[in-house]
Amino acid sequence: MTDYTVRPVRADEWRQVRALRLEALQDEAAPLAFLESYEQGLAHPDAFWRDRAAGSSADAGPDAASRQLVAVAGGADGGEATGTWVGTVVVLVETVGGRDFEGRTIERAAGHVVGVYVAPGHRGAGVIDRLLAEALAWAETRGLDRARLYVHADNPRAQGAYRRAGFAPTGTTVDGSIGPEIEMARAL
Image (cartoon, rainbow, N blue to C red; front, side):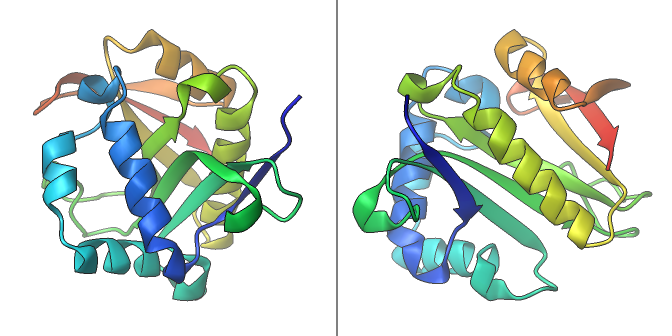
């Protein structure tokens, strides 16, 4: 049985953030899960990845607008040298009056769960459950009382994982760049 540590990324781990994202973008489910392609991800300069890691890291401080968590297999401390990154999730803090990824005005503050990925060899081991639990706990520390996400209508595996974490369909659907997506939400 593999031991997993779930923790926030650190600002200096931008190379690992990049590598895991590029791995996710090559997954067979990527076209149903991510708004960018592998080629688009690969084209981002190092500065993009540095900024992305720094802004969502534990180093970003208590008022960060996002938090990225990573699941590390092996290694008691979850450190880079002693473990392998096998999953990730990002939570964005949505504030009233801001704009969501579709450009709509946000009417209710929430944590918006995005960028969810677990490597194929680690699926079914509870990694997604631990990632989501930690992500939602962080959103609560930001004073949020609700979390939401979008999941592709043709991705029942992901829908099932989100249901296990307490998410339920809200009745809102979006026909975006990757096709029909279902909004799911839950109270925190």
